[in-house]
Length: 196
View 1 (cartoon, rainbow, N blue to C red):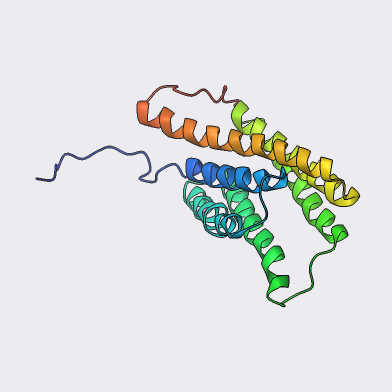
View 2: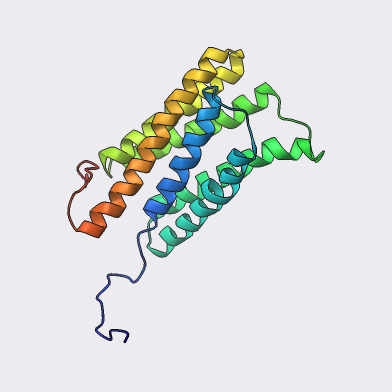
């Protein structure tokens, strides 16, 4: 028999942040294992970029809008479409739809995302330490990727890969911490104080 006792809920909408953070984090880790030189660019990375890093984050962002969270809406939908656009940059030339992006164009692309991330970092100063780390490390990652493309230096690209693994892992940690802390109703994994 299905229980009929009502369960009180705040706004009836689950917290979408863990989905967005895990989608971003897992896709970032996998791409940056490639950037660190461990395996080639392949369909696994592209599929993650479309379906988890891309679509799942866009969905999380739309739900954040329903929760009246402008920061979550802006961050998750933007980075979801970042992943989709990155896959487009890789796949479109292979399909003959457009010329491949030059190193200079990739520097501009990654650079503008680095500036955007740096600006969003200031929003995290009113949130928690874990998100501050995610956005600070992501800002560094974008500018390391710019330096790698600008110089063609493989060592810088590999360094960016290792830094990106740390960034992605921090997002996964923050997402899972949100889930476990909510499930257990207490701090299981700390994310730092919330600044108000």
